[in-house]
Picture (cartoon, one colour):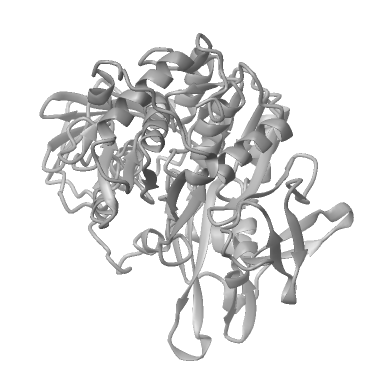
Length: 563
C-alpha cells in the first residue's frame, strides 16, 4: 500500500476523538476489511463514513479485495438505497450506528488481524465511482482511477506545500471528490495526518483545529464564513476553499484578522482540480501545472487534463465562461446557463449574487430564474442568508444595479441556505424554500399554545408549546433513518420567528450568546419554548425543553431598530 500510504509503520496517519492511528494500524485495519470483502465476487462497494480514518481503511480494504468503491451523492437514505440497489454492488460499508442496512466498519475493525497479506493492484486498476450532487442537473456517476486520484493528491501536496507531518482537517465529507482528495488522499500520500472529525460550525471548527493541531483546513465558503466570525482562531499554514465562490469579505477577514493564507480551488467532479488562486491578492485563476485551459466559442472553457475520463473528448467543455489573461491565467465569468433573459433583457444570476454578497449583513446568496406569466418570460427569485436585512432593503440595494424588470419578484431571507456538505446548492432544495415550490413540505413550526408567564420585574416572559411535525421539511437529512431538527432551524424557524412575532419592536438580531445544544429534537416530539425578554439589555433569553429534558438554550441580543 506504499503507493498510497508511504508512511513508516510507526508514523501517525490519523488523530481524533476516537484515538490516533499509525500507518501499521491502518494497513492492518484495511486488511481486516479486505478479508471480509474477499468473500464477495468482484464488483462495487458502497462506502459512507463520517470518520475519515474509517473511510480510509474501508477504501484501501475494498481496493485490496479487488472491488471498486462507489460513493453516493450524499448520505441521505434514498440516495444510499439507490446506490446499494445497483446490480454490481456487493456490499455497503458505513460507520453510522443504528442504520439498518449494510456492515458497520467499526465491527469489521474488531476482527482478528488477517494473516493473509493484502496488497493493492496497480493504481490504474483501482477505481472510485463518484456521483455528482445534481446541483445543475441530473445526477451522474463519474469513474476515477487510482492513477488519477493518487496522482492528483501527489500534485496537490507538491503545489501547496502539504508534506510530511501536515495535519489536515476537512469540513467536507469524503463522499465528494473534494473531500476525498483533500481530506483523505492528500494527507495519506503526503505522509501527513488525517483529522478524523469533520466539524461544521465555526466554534466547533476552531476548537477542533486547536485540539488536533491541524496545520491545514479544507472547507467550503459557507463553513469558512462561520469560521471567520470566531473571535480567535489558531494559526494554520493554509485554508482551502472550493465548491462555490468564496465571498471577498470572508477571505479578507481570514487573512487580515486571523493571518491565514487562503487558497481557492476551482474544479468539478468530472475534471478534478482545474485551477487555483489567492482571492486576497488576485481575481484571476492559475491552471494546475498539468492542465491546459483555453477559451472556446463564446468564451466557454476548453480543458485538457489527465484527470478527465480517458474516453472523454479533448478538449473537454466545462460549462463556464472564461476570459484569458496573461501568463495562461484566466478570469472566471460564471456558468454558461447563468445568463437569462427577463422581459428581453439579459440578467446574470452570478452578478445578482455578487451584488447581494456585497450587501452588509448578507452571508450567503443564491439567485435562480423561474418561468413567469405574460411577456416577462422569466423572473428572478433569490434566497439570502442575512442579518439586519428585509426584502425591501434587499430590493433597494439591487435597484441601483439592475434594470427594474430584472429585480427579484420573490425573496426569501433565512439564517442559512440549504447547502450540501460540499457547499453546493441543489436546485430542488433551493426551490423548496419558496412556498409552493416543487416538493414543498411544511417549513414552519406553529405553536399549539402560547401563554404569558410570571417574570422578574421589568421583564416579560412567554411559554410556547409545539409538536414537531414529522413532515417538516427541515427534518430531511442529517442521519439516515434518524431525522433530527437542525440547530439552525431551532434558532431561526423557532426562536427568532416567535420573538419577532411577539415583540416586533425587538430590533435587528446582532449576536447569539451562551448558545448550547444538549439534546436532539426528533419528529413528533412535544417541545416547550420559554422566552424571557429584558428590554433594557435588548436581549431575549430562551430555553427549549423536550420529552428528555433541556434541548437548547441561549441569549439573542438585539440592537437598533428594524432594518
